[in-house]
Amino acid sequence: MVLNKTLLMCKPDYFEVSYEINPWMHDNIGKVDQAKASLQWQHLHDTLAARANIKLITAQPGLPDMVFTANAGLVHKQTVIVSTFRHVQRHGESAHYDAFFRHEGYVIKSLQSGTTFEGAGDALFDGSGRLWLGSGPRSDVCAHSEIAQALEIAIHAVHLVNPRWYHLDTAFCPLSAGYALAYEKAFSPESIALIRQQFGDKAIWISDEDAHNFACNAVCLDHDIVLYRASPALQNALQQCGFNVIETDVSEFIKSGGSCKCMTLEI
Ligand code: ARG
Figure (cartoon, rainbow, N blue to C red):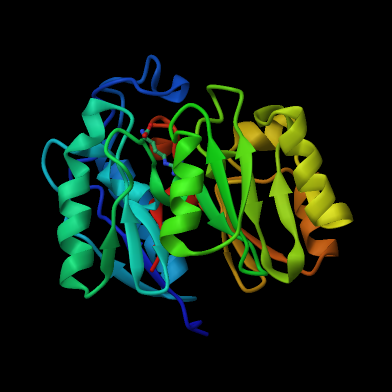
């Protein structure tokens, strides 16, 4: 069944690890098997296309991380805040996302110049429409108040304290029916307390092993959860909550520090 959702994706035509801007990329420069990456991306695409509409943005040479469309921007109704990347290696992507969203008829809003913000990588809506914003290695904390103002919505701000969990979507994933996946070691004590307070026993705290397999970087479509890998214990916990876990191999993209969710953006 195709749900009433549209996901933006980008083919990995120019995907590689050619620089190092997060700990996962360390020692992986030049090590991507491009043929394998294409097959893995296509499989993810087909898995998602059976459950949602997919739209594509054209990949650009010299911008290998464009495959991670979660970082294109933050989409709220017909408004988009296009990302302003922390690292110079990704700066060139913003103009392509800007052009894409303008062409699609979205209203573009900008943050103050100098504020870095990496889109849905650090901005996730939960099932009740509350916006969770992460700050730390990538997005500036001052982006939060600017976003709340620009979109006229209430936000929950959390702080990422560990360079390996550099985007919110590497360590937190709101699911359907009021549940969320979260990884404790990624967050400051105040942020852990906020997640506990808001989700209560519907917060599913994942193990180190699952965190390293990017279990929080999951695409949740109704009761289907598409992710790279989940341990038997996590699969069991999710099944108990009524979810159906679908694993898909994205090992080539893990080399760049991204998994399933990073390669999608709900628009
Ligand atoms: N290599 C990319 C980077 O470091 C990976 C981005 C993953 N995206 C995400 N939303 N977590 O920027």
